[in-house]
Image 1 (cartoon, rainbow, N blue to C red):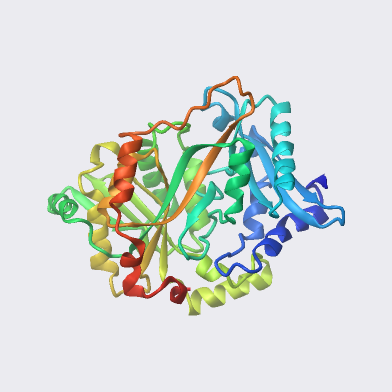
Image 2: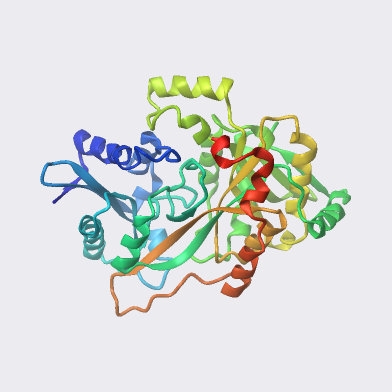
Length: 417
């Protein structure tokens, strides 16, 4: 077996073709867009390269056939957030061969070690956490979600036998798009709903600049106390709003205000993989044409909640249920959307897990962010829980509505594909 740096058209092509070999018999796999992944490794497009660096490799066997791939990266704002310098690995794919997997992990570890890293997290992204983050360890019989990692079960064994430990778990939830929240949550929502200072609106009628300002104000307050958090700047928020504009439906991105100040957002997109599955991982000219055809004539029945946040003062006061009520009034029967997949929520975020429970969600998928201590003299520390304990997480998760019961009105998952 031989490790080869990805540094030319041939190796880039091999990097992208490997998953098509590994998942050819998996009906739930939908390839990531080649262009999305290449943007991660584009020095001009990924701001993480301003102070960071990245490298990726493929692994070939004696017959020069690609059997694995991996990337490693260092981003100062990430590694400085922890007690020890911490790098990252991601985009890992491998045949079911432990020796091959360990060779890939050794390659990434040694690259990070040479650059002063004492720990490595993975699989993570060289960029924002909303994409390509975590190893899937549990999945309902449900198709892959846009920009969310999807992998075979044997990857978990590779990571854990190598020595990775669970830094935190990531829960992906499903709910009926307009299912009512629990009654106690609805009562809180009614109090806000009848307060003349409280208002909910969708993203229609606002410019990208205005939406970015709303988003920024809420995001930095809502996530300010999370470990590893770095405040977002306006330029970044503005870039996000511009990036999602071609695919967003303004009706399903909601903002809440109190006394004209933004206090919460629920940013949704149509679940793009219901459309992107037809372009086979390549948004070239032909892929773009197919995307437009399927987007306009088939569309998506699922909403993908990419981010949801409430500023601390209003958490637990019914804002979330009020937004669900707004969706029921303005979107039920007036749009094609029937259900929601929520982007992952870390098990450390007890408050948000409680919110999700009150919104009558079901667990759809579970991922894990792992940490490996390159310097084993440094003790491993799990991500700190915010607003509760591990026992609280167990109680919340055990009380969720079973997925089959929640999805019954739409038929089986196989039928829904």
